Amino acid sequence: MTTSTPVLRTRICELLGIEHPIVLAGMSPVSRAELTAAVSEAGGLGVLGAAAMGPDELRQQIRAVRERTSKPFGVDILLPNATASVEDLRQPATDGRPAGGLPEEYLAFQREAATTFGLPEAASPARPRGGGPGGETAKRQVEVILEERVPVFASVLGNPAPFVPALHAAGIMVMALVGNVKNARRVVEGGCDIVVAQGTEAGGHTGRVGTMALVPQVVDAVAPVPVVAAGGVADGRGLAAAIALGAEGVWCGTAFLATPEAALDDELKERVVAAGEEDTRITRLYSGKTMRNINNPLIDLWESSGLGALPMGAQGAIVEPIQRAAREAGRIDLIRNAGGQAAGMVTSRRSAAEVVRAMVDEASEALARLWDLTGEPVRP
Ligand SMILES: Cc1cc2nc3c(=O)[nH]c(=O)nc-3n(C[C@H](O)[C@H](O)[C@H](O)COP(=O)(O)O)c2cc1C
Image 1 (cartoon, rainbow, N blue to C red):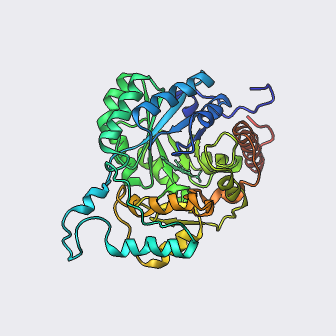
Image 2 (cartoon, protein in one colour):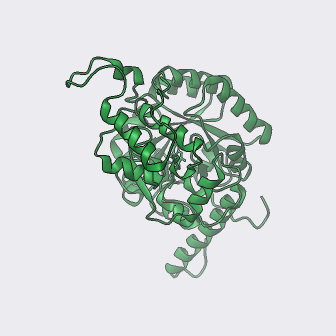
Image 3 (tube, rainbow, N blue to C red):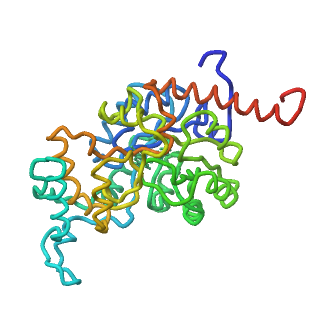
């Protein structure tokens, strides 16, 4: 930190041991060790997006963060909540459809995608998965987090309550991401230390309520537990606004997508930089749950098909073969590219440290402007 860096400290800086109230969203698979360490090293809190990591990879990634920085960081996982495996589809169908694998209408969608986009046969057999993230996976991930004494645990979808006593006993702070007031209350009752209130503008899995309306309602509902705002924040004006809404910091994903440290195809980073505020779309195509992505023709095809999504985990049986085929054919534009409405603010390829630094500078300018509006002659 240079002497000219403005100071903007909130309670979460004390709780998390960080200089700036800026948290890197635990984006799977984008927030790996390099990006996590870069944000922590810049004075924010880096969070590993570990949802899809098995225990060995998670341990390796935690250690890789520690090789790059001695500052605090977190690990984000997906907790069990309505996941299903492709094996569930093999149960005899109750609605008259044949049992044994994907129903015909989904196979037809795979064929249509192959024809429309000139992909190799997309309907290769889906790799059966044990229910995707969640369940036993989450338990094993938490064991690693405990063993490695990671400073901060973050979770999305489910409730971290069953893990909170062990995490607290190990001195680990618990953050949980929510999209409505009901879930904010639920995670706080479960012992969560910091609530991340994520508005629908956000990239990735997202809810229905906008950040501007959600944050103050969550702040009121869970006071005095600190709240961090997420969804649509990609510069210091957003950080200042979040603080004005009663939040104590921001959790940002899209802002870091085009950094060199992000684990994302270069072509997908370029798509983020090129995207405007209207270029994202919420779809269940990629995971079975509502996820905001930089839009692409495959999403349009799915949304116009009228097909309902399968439960999380099982939906992969539809989309993963198409994604593999798209990669084979070099159609990177059809690959999942989660990103939020703030993509319109990401207009250049800056390093993670530059993103953090600019956010702090802009936020203090924005807060100074607000102070000037009060007509007070001297700033405190
Ligand atoms: C590429 C991408 C992957 C994401 N993966 C996860 C994840 O694995 N776990 C999670 O808690 N949130 C995930 N999210 C959501 C973020 O945690 C965060 O809430 C969101 O990015 C904040 O909104 P913003 O994109 O407008 O900054 C992801 C978001 C993106 C853009």
